[in-house]
Length: 120
Image (cartoon, rainbow, N blue to C red; front, side, top):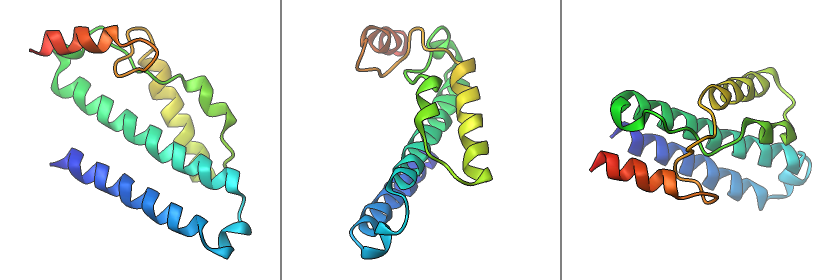
């Protein structure tokens, strides 16, 4: 139920952002920053979901990491302290949870299948 609400919040954010992109006012703001914020929302949500799964299913998740690389966040364009603080927390979480055996990755699906096997 909480996960469904979180997904709805992210979907609502993205819908609102895309609607804003269609308005003339959006031309005033830097498109790179708006897209960076969208990516940050999605990655922060990924971390929340991963942390919840890791806590709830600790035996199943043991040995599996994240599929995102924190170094990719260095390309984000963010101008305010709250966003910068958030990206630092996301990078810290991703760094601590490593990319080896990253689940739900398009690069290597094997860890996802192993985790699913362990769950079943």
